[in-house]
Length: 201
Length: 272
Image (cartoon, rainbow over all chains, first blue to last red; front, side, top):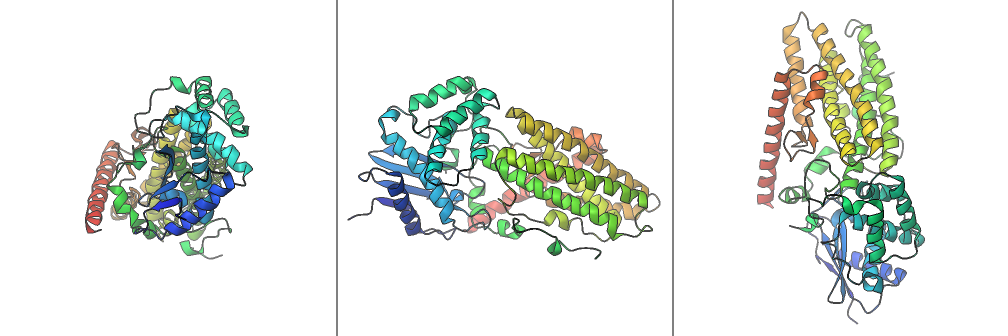
């Protein structure tokens, strides 16, 4: 049976990451979160990026989950240039949960990750990480709250919205947009920097 | 107690992980990344990985505060009164109190941003600049060069707090910035007093300061261009006693460092 997880590059040249190890972790993660077994997963790791330039994007294109992720996300912060299986597992859970969301009815019509606003993304991340925590992921709630605040404001309304997202069992694309209206994030000036800038080479 | 403590003997608990600056300099990804556009260097909410970058910088500020505390503390102890007047040591003791407070504030700011002690590695090259055996050199390197850098860093973070509407970050950085201005001023005053009758020693000390300044421009880390993450805080430097001439000179040095880093990256990228 052909593997359904494909990792690129197959051979890392700048850092000692192992594509097979990453694929194996992704397989375990997919099973853990109940990712649809008939959907292929393609993971592209950008090995040129290092901490603190973290980031990942999850899209569904032609029926397959396409994950782009910064090499920094898999990097052991205490041992730069070294792979951290625990960190990889945690971040792949979050990335694949977002891909799983995209496969659900609640995300029909959702923008691709390159077109999503930073506020929409922060809201989505809050929700996904809340669910990831239930799966045993070491979620740093305060770090997420700070990321949410950067895009939605340092206000009580924003904090209450974050709490609801973090505790929710599920979320929809329209629900995320409603949160952005509620916090006033939709009224903020559009970002001058493309949200997928790190992905661009 | 031992005098002139080398950086290798600094006391840290198990949470801290020491890194060497050369590991980052010779990281094979560096030259590749230098040729890419990773967004505006200045701190901003629409900068890619803005939160992670601010957490990493905040952790760097925190360990910098520990080392500043250690540096000022060593100056209180390392020199006899004929080398460094008691009044100078009193100023350093007062600075220790400020740096201790900054450590505590930085820990709380780290909590606020969602990081923790030891999440990132610590490089001790700041303390290394505080190991000069000549008190005048040390004071100039630490209180004028490094504390001057602290003015630039705190002002940059304060501006980021303002831009992101984060009242906690803006307020804390503003207060720490005020302390740094007094630290630089102490350095300027003591440099003048201790070298009043020795212009050659003063020039050597200022040359040492320029060397430290150049190192801490960190290949484009500080400057007055958009590509510099930490911006030169001219107004606060003036308040600390730096002249326009000194600020212009530092700006020129920073621009040279940025250009040298760019050329080095292009060279390394071409070799890979």
